[in-house]
Length: 257
Image (cartoon, rainbow, N blue to C red; front, side, top):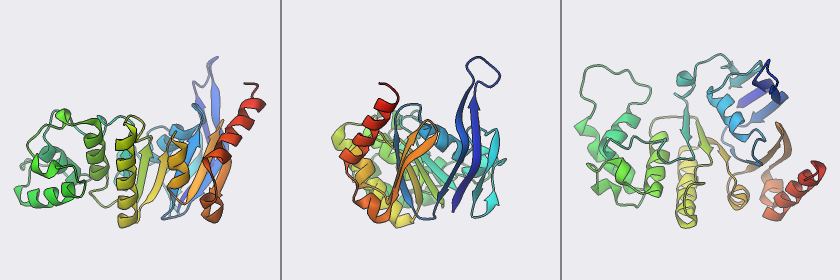
């Protein structure tokens, strides 16, 4: 279980622009849950992911995994258990390196590096098998530089690479936002298959309300650092896009927009 307890997060502290985003915020995510997170810009979605991953510190509160406090744990240590895919397909891969070299980097995540060769030729067959499941023909382009691939191909690779080593959590930060609708659908289908096969606890931030409704077994809606919708199980399964839009409208009216 992932538990955030009494989280306080300030931006620009001590200045005229000081803003408290999370004020005694708490959240629990059960092991194996697939949580979709929606909300307007500035609602706290990406900040929530950054706090979980250790990309930004908190002023108070605690973060724990299965009872172990990781609040002070460095980001690179947390990344041993966390795979993260970003909105920009260029972030999760190295464009100047080949597909093979990128796969080797992902395969060595969390391992110590010495003076040995970076490419293990004995693993090439394994890499091809991993790429073949994407159905994009990348297994036959091992020597092609990743920078020459399409955005969808790179995002598929980023998703695959982030889950190659044993992880417990998959963090998806609007990972389909930069893709065309058809490619985004393919990436979501791939996402669901990988999550189920590897039994990963998953948190997906998305602006696509259809994806939020169709995928996962829990849905959160963030607003000003709070969860204004939290539905799981049958309640989540019965939600529609209109239900979320209605809540957006209510918030807009409350805010005078």
